Image 1 (cartoon, rainbow, N blue to C red):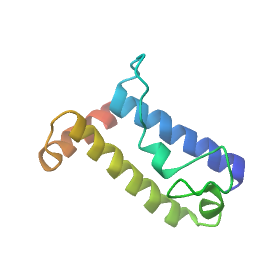
Image 2: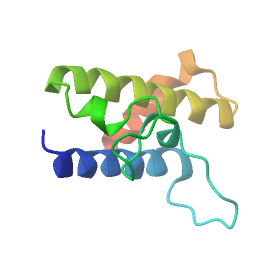
Image 3: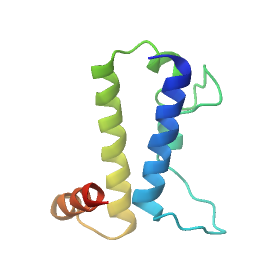
Image 4: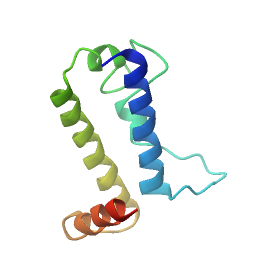
Length: 101
């Protein structure tokens, strides 16, 4: 995957997190994204994130999918924590809701 294509994909992931966790709500309160702990599109060598661009660019598609799965698990976990939901009971309902949308 080329660097621009990877950046586009990462931006799409952030937009998806916004839809899952914040329902596109505009708020004056700054929103803390899980995405910010995992990725950055600003710097190729950003060491403050779990998966900097230099590391992602070296991975094959299957390895990237595993990282994206890990990221989405963290997004859903955070969503459940924020909404007082049990992850085990409600993860299926959330997944179905996303699929339907």
